[in-house]
Image (cartoon, rainbow, N blue to C red; front, side, top):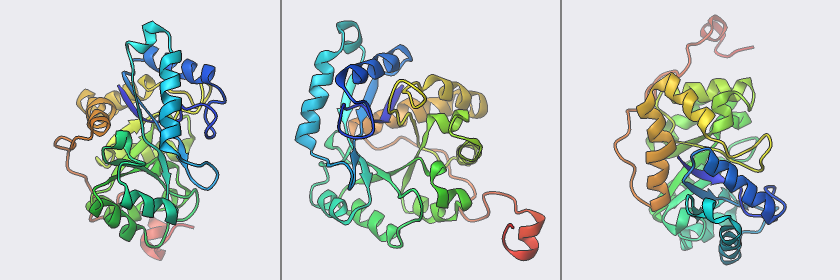
Length: 266
């Protein structure tokens, strides 16, 4: 499996505090069957993103791994890209700076609450600059939890979606679980990743989610979301043929009788 969203670097954000914990996270991932990890440190107002420094840290983690682990894992660097004006301008000027291995796939995180009004314009400008935006964990965004309608036009415009493994298994709560299932069932998901921060609750194990997706949607879908698509992103290659996204021009969920009559749920 290939994990393209993983807070692996020590001491740079809300992930591991030291290199020993970073090593433990890699060891756990390798034992779980992960062969590639993209370190995605936050790039926001709270945490400065400096790619050369992060590359150096990643190399230090690589060198600290036991030989038996190092030979089984390939580490790469991207970012957890937040929609700040400065970030957007820098990404357009230098598409390699924030993207996965500098090859174009950009892991984009929305604010916890609300959606920027000019988001479609921003997504378009990033694509024009040669980037492929990937929206991280939409199932956990409070605004999208209340309505998935905004996703329709974004998907039609070429946006890709990544859901969190713990959402798929239900460990991020009932709402995130329900929405991740809805997205999976309608072929709106392109990647499943760990968003790991530790070896505790938010750990890097992907196999429980892989098994869940394989049971619900079939082995072919699981391989596409956990291996084929993320490996393409890791290598900067186009995704292979994807199944048609369903219900992009109609309601994703059947309306309750209250919504059919009054237009919204109480």
